Amino acid sequence: MTSPIKIAVAGANGRMGRAVLPLLAADPAFAVIGGIGRPGSIGEGLIDRSDAIATADVILDFTTGRAAAELAGLCASAGGPALVIGATGFEPDELERIMEAARTIPILRSGNFSIGLNMLLGLVAQAARALPAQGWDIEILEAHHNRKIDAPSGTALMLGEAAAEGRGVSLASVERRGRDGITGERPPGEIGFAVLRAGGLVGEHSVLFAAAEEVVTLSHSALDRDMFARGALAAARWVAGRAPGEYSMQDVLNPA
Ligand SMILES: NC(=O)C1=CN([C@@H]2O[C@H](COP(=O)(O)OP(=O)(O)OC[C@H]3O[C@@H](n4cnc5c(N)ncnc54)[C@H](OP(=O)(O)O)[C@@H]3O)[C@@H](O)[C@H]2O)C=CC1
Ligand SMILES: O=C(O)C1=N[C@H](C(=O)O)C[C@H](O)C1
Image (cartoon, rainbow, N blue to C red):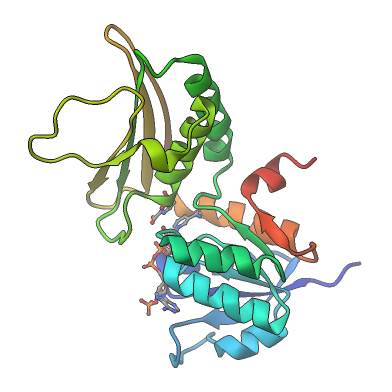
């Protein structure tokens, strides 16, 4: 019998931390060594961040872009553990720090651990490839609960990347984040993002391919956070013991 994966959870007191910890505790593949709170925070089940880095095989992060990038740097400096990053809301320099850390440790990062959503990425790329920019406008809509702090969601950005890849362009060169005032006509080729924040919505994403006389919509609804948590456990099991590098849920769901 292989020994259980020693795992710690950063963001333990958050919505996702609270969803993932009971599933980890019930899974014999894992030995939970504790939760990690904000620096200096103490509480039941929490352990010091540096103790977690020294002890864990894998740390699962559901904090913020900034905190996850900092944790990645600390884990890399220590030569381990592996990291699964579920956090979203990254500045470009934070993504660079994670890429740099992935030269030393394995890091699996995904803004969405759902199986269905990760399958949808392929369909979005396929549709964007098939429907030409001249005549077909792409708009990405997302709706989340009123406690979410980043926008557009990490998932919306992943869908945008998939659409841009299908069109053979970089997302940065065509994205339009929100519209307000006298915006002028919509240029062809733009990939637009629209964001709603309301009540307790878990996570709604739609990609519209709109022509003058017809619309194709590809969409995904998250009904329960446990679904994300189960995907995160699969990611943690997959990344434990891997070579350094940057990985995604595609590696977990479609192994070569
Ligand atoms: N990949 C996926 O499938 C999913 C990703 N997410 C993403 O996961 C992240 C967390 O979501 P959610 O749980 O809803 O958010 P919450 O706000 O409920 O939880 C965030 C947690 O991170 C902690 N935290 C914030 N800043 C720091 C810091 N500097 N150092 C250590 N801990 C910190 C908070 O601490 P405190 O409790 O003290 O405030 C809190 O416990 C978000 O980025 C979200 O977009 C969410 C769902 C699914
Ligand atoms: O903050 C959330 O709740 C969610 N965040 C992720 C994102 O930003 O895409 C994933 C999911 O949509 C829920």
